[in-house]
Image (tube, rainbow over all chains, first blue to last red; front, top):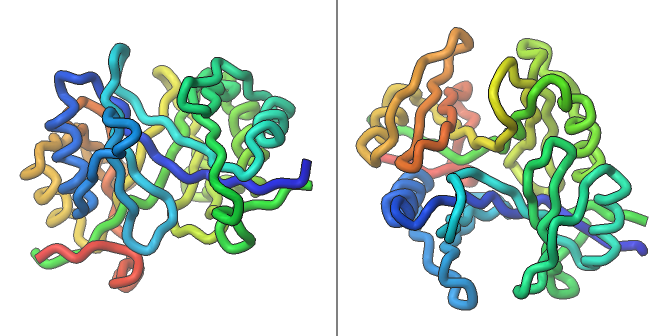
Length: 128
Length: 128
């Protein structure tokens, strides 16, 4: 069960009718273009100056605007089990292969698996 | 008007009745203690491994749970004016000295001024 994880993504989630305006605002706010994520056209993303954390916008199909964070790991099952022990609950496993969970206050966050080697001593926490 | 800014804080905002459970969860999730911010006892904070972005929890006096981000700058007036031109609107200036603004989707974010020298070429964006 030894693995690594890190808080990696800040996602600004907005309804379709305000998506383009919101995307343009956050591109301007951080001073970087946010290209579409080819495999997930509802997502646009950018890195941030001097940081590993990334910023994403997500076009919502339904629901109110909000912000959520993603945790990335090199062992999805181990990390989800670790977070469940801490008090999070599974909501659902997506077709794209990540878990949507809820924290104790009911806030949604996602847990995604990165390719081996992406997480290392300098950018993540080791759990054994 | 030449100044710097950066996206710096992820704040998990939760009602008082779930605050302690939520704080303990996020401390466990990122693997770091989140000490109280002495000047602002409703806030607990931590740095994150290998990143400049910080994680905060905020005990809310009212309202629903959510997540917001803060932008830090070395020139508060210039940065607020820049963000207004991009489509954000001022909500209010707090007693603690930062601005609460809303983005085009209506999501709240805060703009805070850091001491001179905190923001530099490696961790922020320069606006002139």
